Image (cartoon, rainbow, N blue to C red; front, side, top):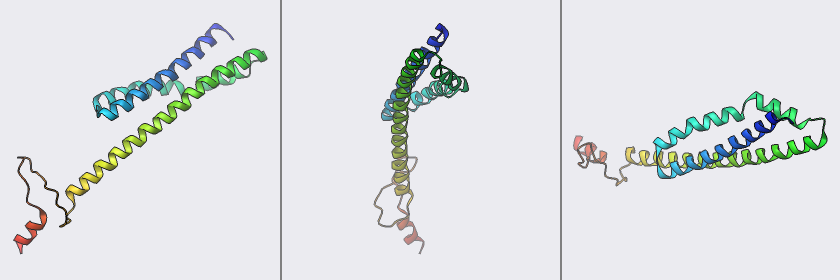
Length: 145
């Protein structure tokens, strides 16, 4: 393995660690409801994912692990296994963030449905733009009769 190859492995490991950090920051931003910070992290995450998903990386993995020197091939495989473990952790973290976002969206949709439903049993008081309580729809229909 050349110095360039070793540097590439080191760079790949670093990118996987950066992705893990970005996903942790993304989760924290979601918990804090800091959508500005969350949006900024998306560009950084996209850059790292582009690197990790590149065809060049796949080709290098094949070359490194098929080295004619068995000892070098085993060392390369160990390094790639470490990188793949990091990427597996990132996959789990990404899934966790996706579940968090999905649950938040379900909650928001449920709240909107409650506010917008014409259910006469609905006792939610809705405010208009001026902060005054809007008359419920059931009262409006009775007044029209």
